[in-house]
Length: 415
Figure 1 (cartoon, rainbow, N blue to C red):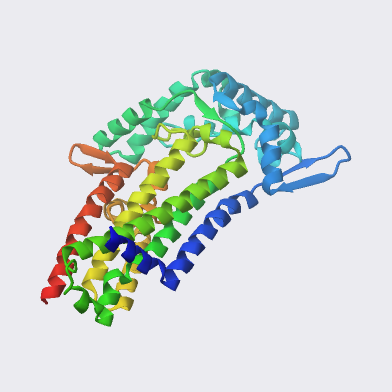
Figure 2: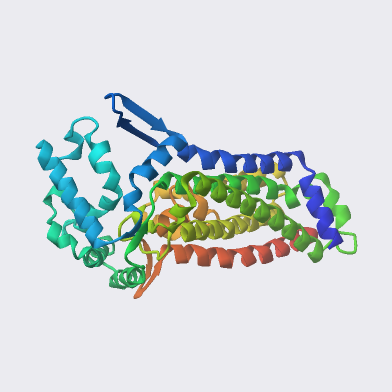
């Protein structure tokens, strides 16, 4: 335990480590606030003047004007929203809400607009996937809203996974477990979830920078030659170094994520955490989670991903004799999932980047987007939902690279 305390103290005394950890904490607040600045609303006051609202004022205005939409998203509510929308457009003789006179959308449609989320997707053509306009939807069919959604997931998976019936069945089984009716509470937007992943990605980069010199710096300075001659300078010393890196990086990420979630939910309102994620992304998303549980899921998955990244970085550190090489390799592997996503075909790319240590916090390839997508690993008659593949990979990679790091460290002594 004393050796562990000394190693943690040694790492934390490094100026770069202090700067990176401080920057991560600062970014937790900054990135939680940025999505709020994107919020915008406007309305026409009694004098006919347009009043523009941004930031927290916009959030408060939207929560107030959409207060009647809060709670269960029942078929009756959705049907009423469709009927009101159609009546509004017929009233002004237009076929699209973009053609409405200025201020009409904000005054007459915005109050119930969230109930229209996903309505076109739910009624999309089962063969072509082409979504109708809301004006083309028969309100009578909305009475069976969730039945239509169940039909939609079947037709969607036939298009997404047309050659993989096992994946189609797995997706339908997952969606059957989703609690209905959905819940919705106004105020939150998907930008905040995106920024949680951006925070995780930046934290992963910082952790890679902190972990990269753990072994290599001692190799480079020659201190390792002396340390190996001590009583605990072999396996125990290697394990202690790794545990210290895991504790520092894991604690830093957890603290940053908790700060982000508390700040973000405080800005948008904690009641929003009860909203079903289907009301934020696709109307037929597969996870049976509300927004709060989804945030925690992404947070825990991000922790596993970062620990896997740190584990792999320590392995690189144990193999490299130069700090620059170790650091460069670690940073390259952090951004490698993004590169593979851009250059490889979809199916091949998902097979590779989903099992890379840093894949879960990549920008376009994060576990957030995997969870709201409909991608599966298809192996013969077996279909595994992509988030399960990613989590399973991290659980395997953490101990695997720990063992490989210890082995590499001991072999370095013999070389």
